[in-house]
Image 1 (cartoon, one colour):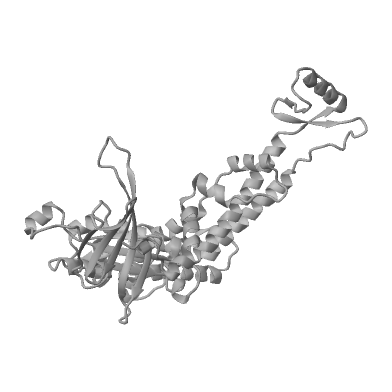
Image 2 (image 1 turned 135 degrees about the vertical axis):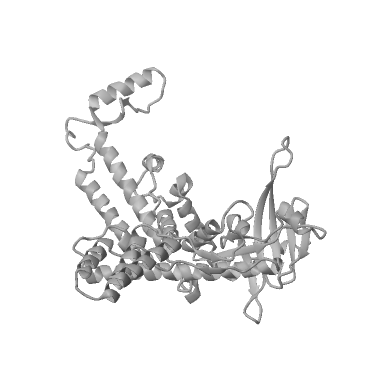
Length: 461
């Protein structure tokens, strides 16, 4: 069989693969990412760069930002009315709840600007009863995929997916007495069926196939509309670049500190000549290298005294680097649109603060809207697999606690002192409930009870 199925890549995939892998590495962090992100100086010798590379550490701002956006966007659990409780608690069929799968999808969007949601049904034979299906957990499931997993796809004239190709990699280790075998596979979905191909030492073979009862490709593409949707690069690439600048600056500051702590020893030329002669008598060659304690030795003659000196960097240089990193970190959050969650400037005007709060609210509300649409589409796909499965009513939270709570409470207290009628006092009381919900989440029923009490109290006055 032609192995082209393992070679083909969508044009968008090919154009973005390198950047996606870089973003993935930056999110993952660790030693491997430091090795590829650390930049060597033009004048840096091998030994110095090797030491700096071993000492380097990484502040993982890309992961912090990607996770923070997801945590804010899904800080309040979505409301799912008439949802199957078993599916909600195990939406992925491997233990992840609906909320957790959608968190994964949101984080993938943050890192790549694109993600996929796969909705599938386990393979089974025969016509099992409802009880047998429940016991065998034969039910639809959803899993979030990164854009690196969906390697190619095509759209039909109706604007919907015509087919999609998903890369799979597994380790076959059923036999405990044999080493695991890495297996590369490609699963091809179209509107009527799916086919699974495996690339082994004997070539490419189709190892399984099945009917797709949904009548559509069971993959939901999710794209940030103001990124790839406008043929633009994703903002996370800028986050990675700034984060790499911080990594390299911090590495320099660390080495400056090390060089200040450990000075270089200076010895006389006569001592060096004497040492060379002694080495020559012992048959060790003409090379001379002396190490005293933790410092390598520098040789100088009487005439050269004061010239052969190692000039260690001053503390001012290190402070300057650290100040630059603080500036870069602030700008990093500004670029993302989360400046309000970074280091707020006390002298920031109220107008500017209000603009920042509105900016973050709109950013998170747009994300919540995108996730809500995607989840609803996934439930509809699940119903195509199982007609007895209800499609729930889904509502994601679009109000976020990023406003100036202290200022809001102070203003509300002043408003509550204004003499006015019952309707005004009810409005003030209901606003207070919303602030209370912003400080600490209040359940829907509890909020309704509090508002009912406010209405009752103002009627009795």
